[in-house]
Length: 114
Picture 1 (cartoon, rainbow, N blue to C red):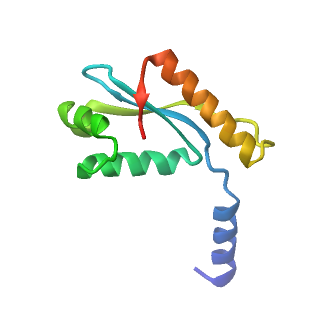
Picture 2: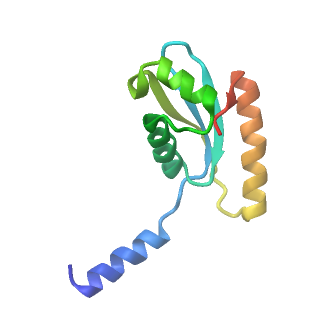
């Protein structure tokens, strides 16, 4: 890859839009649900599943449910809602995330994923 292609690839990576929103981790066998909010849904998915696979997730109830469900095959990561308003600043985005996480936790009778 020459320098100009590399510069273009780096610029495109930096300009990409990171998905912000609310997610759920759900046991397929019991239906037990854990809800969380993230400023980077893709990164959150990777981080959550990685720590669950290692058996080191900081939420012990989630880790126990994951182990009881037989690991990744018995669990799913679902994006419940994604922020569409890109005009919100950091404070508005955090407020929206907290409100929507509370809504989804109540709606699904879920525990916190984090």
